Length: 199
Ligand SMILES: [Zn+2]
Image 1 (cartoon, rainbow, N blue to C red):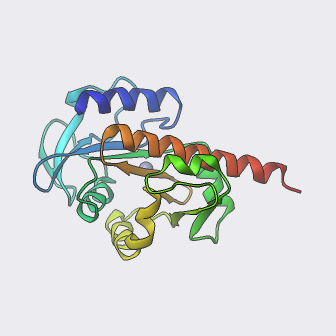
Image 2 (image 1 turned 135 degrees about the vertical axis):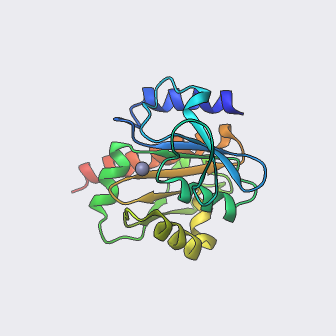
């Protein structure tokens, strides 16, 4: 699974979804452990040695470097969703801008888009997909608690936004997490573009 994650990281970096060492990625390991990209790494050409093992509370266990500060949010997603195997966190311009434009909204609502069907559990453009937006907070355990409190509804989008910051998306495999990330990034970009042309 790590080689697939490394290829996905490279793809994400080449699409400029994680500039300037931003973003982080993880895959589940046995027990309450995850393999997490180390802090401060350029996300292009990541190697296996650029990942560290930590627990779901973001405490370092093995490897060179320290886990990203945002590891606790990855850990909370794995705790709340036992089937989740991979979490991808991107810092794209559309997600950053749209969540700032919608400064008082707790979710971005997508309706009428065919691409909603790229998210597991969605079967029609006629459904409404609510992508939760949490206010940014440098204290990640606080964000993790907010996610836990809203999980029942928030998990349906297979992703969430941290305002002015970026997107978390997850899936039952690296492949599914990547599909969710691309689908949500696509929907956000559509919504941002639509607003630009809206009279
Ligand atoms: Zn981030």
